[in-house]
Image (tube, rainbow, N blue to C red; front, side, top):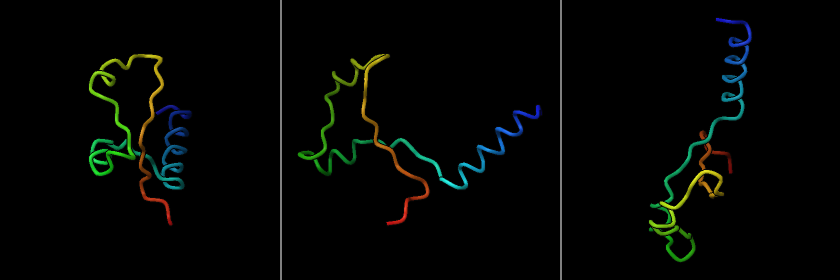
Amino acid sequence: MKPFARLATMFGRARRRWFGRTLVVDPRPIASEAPYTFYLPSENELLAIGPGDLVKVTIQSVPPSPK
């Protein structure tokens, strides 16, 4: 393993240990629980998304942040 690759791997592992990681969450269950407060685009709008379009993503912290 090259020295730089080994260093990058060490820093990557340390960052995950210190800060955790994030996951992209499927928004459909949230939208079904709260249809009036959580907007979910229609199927046609989702199919029209292409490179360069801006989208909102729901993420979850792993492990969860303390409250």
